Length: 164
Image (tube, rainbow, N blue to C red; front, side):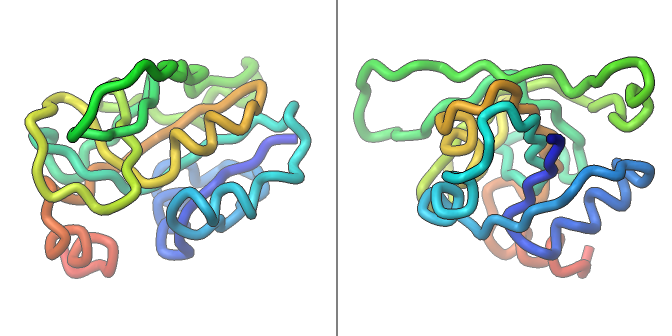
């Protein structure tokens, strides 16, 4: 099974923009760890999941399409040993290859339990779901993120509500 995961209904417009010919099923999970676990816990682990959604970045331009190569939890106040989760490339077999756009950048995604308003991390994106998706043990997880803000909740709301 192939499944696109979005956190909120408003992210469906990203599928329409970047994957207009994609015929995969779409699941709206809700924002954050608990919603991810509740939404995905009973899915078969051989499901290919593609997470597409908005993400913040300290330095990527708003609107940049990023293919995520690996994901980690962001916990800036402490350090502990934790596995880095590598993601599958956003590509399919030759018949479906055209479904995936060429991302402007490739980067690490840091998953947070809250909206990130400041960080010294550069050349990366921040979200609230991807590490939990990857940790659930699916055989193939891929992710495309669109930069919605430069660590500004106000800018995030403007972009996601179509103001910008």
